[in-house]
Amino acid sequence: MTLRLHFFGAARTVTGSCFLLETETARVLVDCGMFQGSKSERELNYRPFPFRPSSLGALCLTHAHIDHSGLVPKLVKAGFDGPIFATGGTSDLASIMLPDSGYIQELEVRQLNRRNSLRGRATVAPIYTADEAEACLAQFRQVPYGHWRDVAPGFRARYWNAGHLLGSASIEMEVSHGGAEKPVRLLFSGDVGPDHKLLQPDPDGPRDLDYVILESTYGDTDRAGVTIERRRRMLRDEVRMARRPGGVLLIPSFAVERTQEILVDLLELMEAGELPEIPVFIDSPLAAKASSVFKKHASELRNGSDLVQALEANWVRFTESVEQSKAIDRIHSFHIVIAASGMCEAGRIRHHLKAWLWHEEATVLFVGFQAQGTLGRILQEGASRVRIHGEEVKVRARMRTLDLYSGHADGPELRAWLTDRLPVRRGVFLVHGEEPALKALQSSLGAPTGSHEAIAPDLVDIYELGGEAPVLVDDHDRRTAPSVPGQRDWHNDLAALQLDINEALDKAADRKAKAVMIRRLRRALEEVGKGFDPSEKQG
Image (cartoon, rainbow, N blue to C red; front, side, top):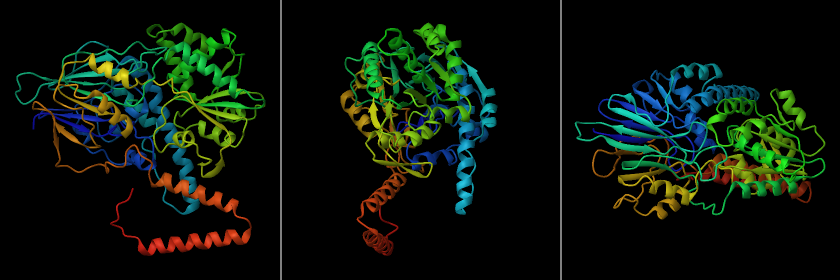
């Protein structure tokens, strides 16, 4: 064995980033993220790691977002005791985001176990607790941008600003192996920021590489003509359209950076008189803590002073307690609520959606990527009914999307970023993207490394990188079928079927019609059960 690269996450999906570099002498993990999206995908978080955590020499983190760092406490809990290398900004954000993730898991598992007990089902445990997340922070080692750092025998790393989030980095890695004359040079892009970011600089990185592992979240998107000014005008128009007596504008948003950017834009619009002062509730304890971290690093940010001013504005109110959160839904005048999570999969936004989705006076504004199978994506695609906390909710609220706050580069920006890294001699791997984005970027790149077309690996693919081109290794067990990531699953289909049945029953003319419908459904279910073939391929 010379040098192998394992894809344990973010392969044909946008979450769960996790890549393992392995030589004869050491193993280094790049990111250890949590899977989000469909229930089948989230279930991967509960499985044992497909590698032995205690065998790792080091973990290098690109940034603090949970889809890149969210399983770090589980990794430590499972036996990893090595250093976790991250920038100062990433370390500071992880110190609040990981314990918050543990707290949310404890809370949701407590609620789930209550329901399981009522149904006679087994109880479950959280992936990790807030205390276990706190414990893993002792292993963080801060690294500056632009300086080489030995991270494991034969491995050294250098961090470049990725322009995506406070502390975000692309990680350059030099790996010496097997007596090779020269080390192999790789660059893990992490999440690459777009050209027009309010708080972050333009992404940076080295040239002249052997391999690039490139994100592709928006590989099929072209945001031509986007500027901060245009984005603010579009936000102004969305707020104006949402203003209705007794109404609300709900913004599901990531608590870290996106929330802060929206606040600065609202500040500018209100100060310019283009919007009146409107109460804005930041209903996220994590966002409040993250804002303190951003204040600490304000001098490192573009427009950092504007951010501090927005955070201290008298129309901005941070809520901490559950009681304060519930009180927001009793307000009778128009207001804005910004709450996590950004994909509506957890947190307080789900409570606000449950309270408001059935009101015509409400507007839901999506400002970021919604992964397949998430509640956010289901709403965005026009669902008329959804299930939240086990209850069916009719959707009457307006659904709007303003996807100009994304921290990710679009297709042309990703191509330009890669062009600036050339030459890339041996290969490009496309990760962190769903199938349409991967295919679009792959097609538009052509052969960026000369004769090698960009590769879109499947989950748990392994590539041998010791030769002049990457070679797929196919002698291993897979963590999950390649068809699972980045798609709706049977849980989504079942929920949709239940909603369709309820709607059809509601429309039935009378009790007799309802009874006929139920008999036919039972008969169909019995026939399917009789003819079910366990070997039949499932979607």
